[in-house]
Image (tube, rainbow, N blue to C red):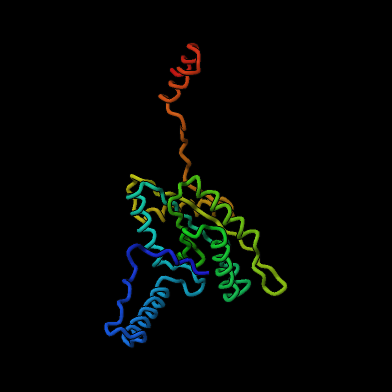
Length: 238
């Protein structure tokens, strides 16, 4: 269930050289392969949350920096969803910390089942998760957040014959090309809407205001009216 397959750029190891003496069972190359395997396993541990198996806070910081840089370079927006499990302290108090841990794993699975493979799901800390949506504007990220919220609400954690129903509150903000914003500031902006969702009753999604988009410019409307409109209708453009 790990979601850390999306790696930072330029981290590919070079191809192994051929054995200098032409042996198929070269001891030196075997040792190098074993060292590479150990290095890969250590790298996986460094960027993975041991409980949930998804990316950890360290990987989140690195990935968000990378995606913000990508937005600046490609002019494609990056959206960030911050998610917090509702009343999680009550879960721990009433069910115990072991069930609380199961709830964290359960929620992480619901998120992974909902988002795209290119999205980056991380455990931000405690019962809070962060989901980075590369190349995604705010209007497209809102349905994603609502699907995650609904998936969690509709998928209770089964504990023997009982069910533990969970909900989550989510906040969204988007980093746009041309903005001056650090990763920490983007997190703070998304967190602001997360807390707004909490204050408004939980189990909901709050987000930055959607900017109205005029799909047809004034100049384009003038051309259309010149081609198809009457002289009287052109007055409406003034």
